[in-house]
Length: 285
Image (cartoon, rainbow, N blue to C red; front, side):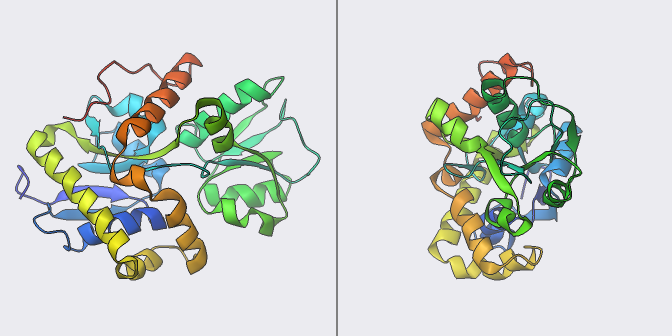
């Protein structure tokens, strides 16, 4: 049991990568793992929960880390980093090449996608981007299609489905990040309450790694859990989603993973988008 003698309260998204990663752990198939009390919430909700200090373990955007690291520590596994998997900026008009003065819909202003977008815009948009409109990510492509906004910043499976809305890719935020830094794209992080203590935190990280390896070892075992929460997603799209967002960085951030996280947050702080990190803020107990 945990030091509080109760299951750890954890919230992650219903997206296929999270359910794939946590399937074995959530269903008691990782020997000696701490028990979990699982709830599901989209990342904009879990970001807010982290800022309020709710729950023991949360999947959040890397962009929220500077606001919560006094209470939570970044776990070295379980999250989403990768290559070729960044957010896209979409437009209705294929001839649109400049977002100066344009209205852009984004899923959150405290998201990695938004930080990557602002860093891209700082490098490539000659004037200032126009109004930013925050809306749920599943509403963004219809809003662009219907002309309610000039462009949209999209994430997740929208990479594979935007053509169905007649939309066009203006730019790939991840491609810009990778080209300018050579680093993978930091997207979603797993954080845990520091007050759990070093022993529990180390045990939890080891259990998450074991859950990832179990999913890789028997992908079909996780399919019912993945599809139950995939919001009617096509199974082939769910597989693409998992293939992009579950990789070696999910098992262990490693040197490149930590460099990517610190690089993103350092650049964002230099642009005034987030508070600066302390030198030991990302260290795992």
